[in-house]
Image (cartoon, rainbow, N blue to C red; front, side):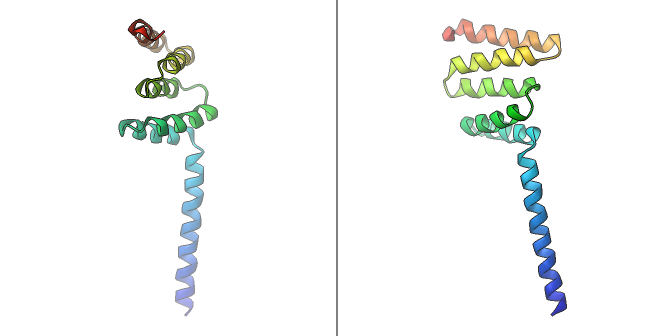
Length: 115
């Protein structure tokens, strides 16, 4: 009987730990970015956007978050939002090479008749 009680307590402890891990993962902007990338790759752009909104609220300084947000909006047909997020990616990027890359992508969005 004591072994069963111990086993039950162990299972409950594992479930409580898993719940805590899930809670903290979902609050991590980089984990949410990874979820956004997976959603994007599966064509679920709305879910990608939801994860990215959270990630950006937690970390406003990662240009890759803004870039994926831009491309996600582009894929749902919101070119105005795509341009806005690409501008933010360019602004937040620390390296000049990234700023130039985002600027070129923004120019392509605008020249494609979206601006």
